[in-house]
Each structure stands twice: as C-alpha cells, then as structure tokens.
Image (cartoon, rainbow, N blue to C red; front, side, top):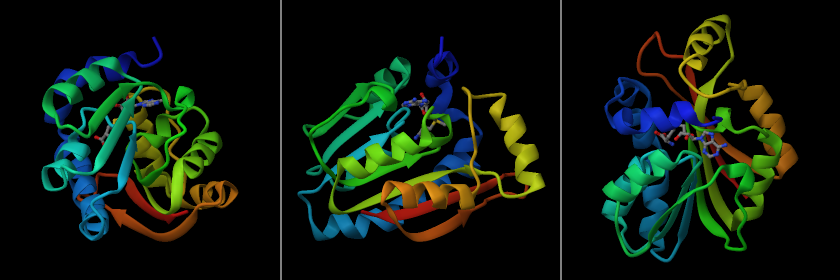
Length: 206
Ligand SMILES: C[S@@+](CC[C@H](N)C(=O)[O-])C[C@H]1O[C@@H](n2cnc3c(N)ncnc32)[C@H](O)[C@@H]1O
C-alpha cells in the first residue's frame, strides 16, 4: 500500500529520534512565526497538510484553543493517533491524501512540515495551497532539502525509511513558489546536528 510505511510508523512516531533533532526544532521555529499572528487575531483558520500525529496542532491549540484547525494526513493510523491526543471543539482531523483534498473553505495559515517531499505532485500541491489561502495568508513549508553532496547522501538514506520522496533544493522550491503565486518572505535553515541534512523553512505569503 502507498502509505503503509507511515501507517506502520504512527504508533511510535512521537518517540522517533528525529523528534529531537529535526521535528521538535521545526515545531519551535514554526511557533515563533505564527504565534504572534494568532495573538493579533483569534478568529483565524489554520490548515495543516500531512499533520502526522497532530503534534504541531496540539502545541498551537494549547495556546490558542479558539482558532479553527483542520489537519489532514494520508495515513489513517496517524489521524487516529491525532484524534486521540488532540481534542477541542474547533479541531478537526481528516484522513485524506493531499492530492484528493478538496475544500471551498479558505485558510489564514497553512502549514506543511516534513511532508511535502512525499506529496506526489509538488506543483499541483502548491497551487492547491495558494487556492486555499485567504488574502494575506501565511504559508509555512519545512522539509529536508538537497543542496549539496552531503545533503544528497543523507537524504538518500532518509528516503529508505519513508514513502517515495523527492527532497527538492531551495532553488527548485523557489521556482515552484513563483509558479504557484506564493511570495517568499524568508528561508531559514534549521540544522541541529552536523549529520542532519539542510532542513529548510520557507515562510511564504499569498
Ligand atoms: C515525516 S511525517 C511528518 C508529520 C508531521 N507533519 C511532522 O512534522 O512531524 C510525513 C507525513 O506525511 C504524510 N503523507 C505522506 N504522503 C502524503 C500525502 N500524499 N498526503 C497527505 N499526507 C501524506 C505521512 O502519512 C506522514 O504522516
């Protein structure tokens, strides 16, 4: 099955070693950007693509329970775990691959951390994100990125533990953002350990 690796990982996902050096630091950086925005307006709507076990939505909703949240993920076991550990009146999780996701709702914040490399059609996904945006929306995408021989090597081994993946370079991502009409505000590199690949955070605006 297409998402079997993720289905199998769900029960131990929150205890994986990458939580310490990649996923946890990523959530910290995302919070730094979006919490001030949420502080200014509590009526915003947030969408997360490839939300895994819902850790990011949990950390945000603990501080801002009144925001409207929707997290989607292709793996049912990830969504089951998210539903068990993150609850709230305005929090929804849906098992759905991004390529099948359709919505007439618009969002003010769109997040996608460490999931974009696994999405089958990168260009279409970014156009979908742009389409889901309210005017002035913030989009944050974070993922491993291949910008050097070292990145190539590390990501080659990383790929073996995941579903089919393409870890695009910062340059390649920039071209796709432009095509989708998303304006890049900042690129930040998160790297906790020398043996980690470039983890690029893209802060975008519609
Ligand atoms: C490395 S995990 C990241 C989870 C979470 N965003 C985080 O930062 O910890 C990648 C997630 O992407 C999901 N995923 C993979 N392909 C997907 C697709 N086509 N549509 C939606 N989710 C997908 C997987 O099921 C998995 O939960």
